[in-house]
Image: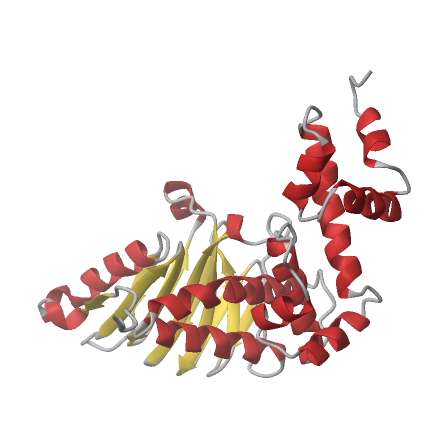
Length: 320
């Protein structure tokens, strides 16, 4: 029996659901519940309107909001009350805004994406009506962790930043009709955010080409699946939604082939197992790391480390 794709459940809040006199107070509570604890101040207009559609996909929050003029401020005092450790990726869909954090200013125009660190004070100012998609990501889900106080803002409205923003906007729309497809694409979204964060923080080369973005995606996919003994070029290309030719071209810039990348990651996993489980037979270690057998583990380990698995394990502290 065929089943229709099911949407991700969404919660909708609207100021239209309450009396006009209570609209902004209601909105301020919704903002704090959806994102992090902030102080929200209305614009000069007497009547306020706002609406949020919110969903959570595997711990990642997506909130599309449309609202009138307002200012949002997160102070140190509010951080102390609500110490959530997240990044908020703000993608401007309509209107203009201004973000300031740690002395850095980002002007938000349609298509622009900016990152906000919840652990540092910030201010958002919207003089007119606007729409945004805000993606809330726990820092624990990201590989890139800037040093304390180093906040990244603004990836711009073109180049690789726009690629990431468009992917997130499309993924948010997909949740509305096909939860399965959205869930399958979510790891790629987290990878893209991680890459964008590294670029914006200046801790990774910001190559204005799709090649760098593709290479990051390949590396992360292989890291997640390196212990699968069936992992091959076809599987990696399909998992990254690219052709084999594109995959090989992206990896060529690193000077490391796909075979070498998989071997290096499997050996890295084997090294951890050899130290943490010294009693485990080498054949079991080989299987756990995705190797076809003990002999394959032995060849790969020697090629990467210059020693055998047994010799490596014998060097651990406390070994006889």
